[in-house]
Image (cartoon, rainbow, N blue to C red; front, side, top):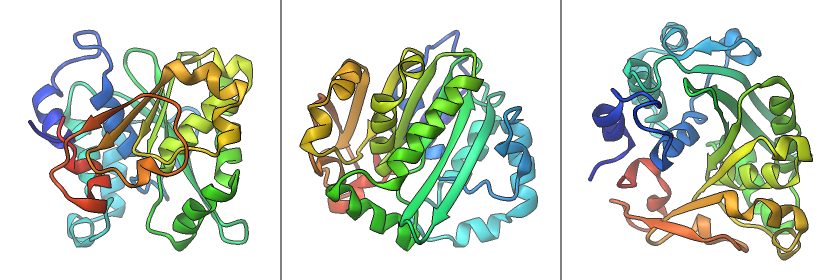
Length: 263
């Protein structure tokens, strides 16, 4: 047993041709969206930047000492990215179309990126709740209906599908998982037909009207949901899909931490 960092060490030498995309790859790419890639212009463009080059640019902006001083729950994401860059499995992937928007008046926190893998597919990764007050407030707003980030997620996913040739996987952790499911359900049919799988990693569910909608039912068999043993966030609101329970080395609310999940 080990966590996602161990997986990169143990299985990072395998290409996607040798070992096809799996649920642990999903966890890694969902977690990747927590890395703050602001001030790296190449990552925002359609052409994007190869992961190895991206890490070099990232290190110009952030020292290891600065990263180690971070005490937030997403502190390990940059270190995971560096390990990914060293691996055969992820080193040549291209990261592009990165956005990171915080709109205080609209109570919206939205961040996402597209990761193009060597197998020709793209993983569209929606960031979960970050450490901003706006991010947490928007989480609470999920219980009242559609939040701005959900509408933004649909727009983003449709834009990606218009400019990307390969098939799509869509996923995220926490609120990011909720956004992934919502965007996949309510994007247009052209976009929906490009989606292989949708991953909700301990993200909240939806109000009754959403899970009973035709749009949601159209993608139900594509949704893969993962939760730790005593999930709290992932049990919020309504879920229609089946889910898989993972072992976490943490207790209580801290089980929400992806790095504690045993894979």
